[in-house]
Image 1 (spheres, rainbow, N blue to C red):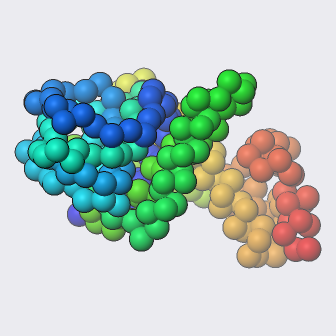
Image 2 (image 1 turned 180 degrees about the vertical axis):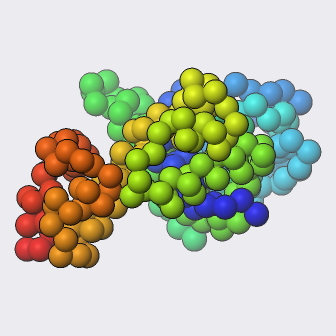
Amino acid sequence: MIMNHQTLLTNYLSNLQIELFMVNFNRCDTDWRDLDYTPDYSKFYLICEGEGWLKISDQEYYPAPGQLFLMPEGVTQSYSAISDRPFLKYWCHFSAKVGGINLFQILNFPHFCSSDQPELIQEIFNSILNYARSGEVYAHMMAKSKLIELLSHYIMHLDQEQISYNNVPVMEKISAILAYIDSNIEESISVRDLAQIAYMHPNYFIRFFKQHIGVPPMHYIASKKMEKAKELLTCTPKTVTAIAEHLGFSDLYYFSRQFKKHTGLNPTEYRKQIMV
């Protein structure tokens, strides 16, 4: 069992970069068919009616109306109509990357979910479709935000234990690094410290960490320190100076500047706001 499963998932998903390629709503032809191809994009299918067959990796499916299927980039797939009632479906092609890596090379997701709100998924797909067809300057951004909502809805309907890792040794290494950061967040943590845990050269470690977490290690550490600072400002009567020292900052001005960079308020202003 990988440590910090929820922490790792949160980091991957919060640093996700989504790109929408195509979206449509139509009925497949009776000759709709392709066998054993490996796309360079991922797909969502929302089945509305009809019959058909999908094969994703070595698993075969006969999707039912209301099911939302995820067909990941880089995985061998097949599909075909199987009767004179082919699928009527919403579909989109997209990419999902973390630090330039295909999300589905890192994580394994179940291939479909059955939502208790199929009409909501249809509304999301309709929004993606309308924005994709719009000529407004903001439309592509809105289409991407709705695609993120669709992926979020998909993940919401999964048990976290259904999501697994493709490279367990690498994930265990990342997990150990994140656990070390959490346990030592009140100390001064260097890249060299973390690189030693991973048995890597510091320069290589920085690239490795950013690939898998989405941000450089010092950026991640700074963010975690600010989260801890917010907790201490909220839950303890400690002075700002004491909190800064507690988190390893010898320069109060630098601490305040970093805090404002992450929250938009200096520590004193933040404490006043949350105490209102």
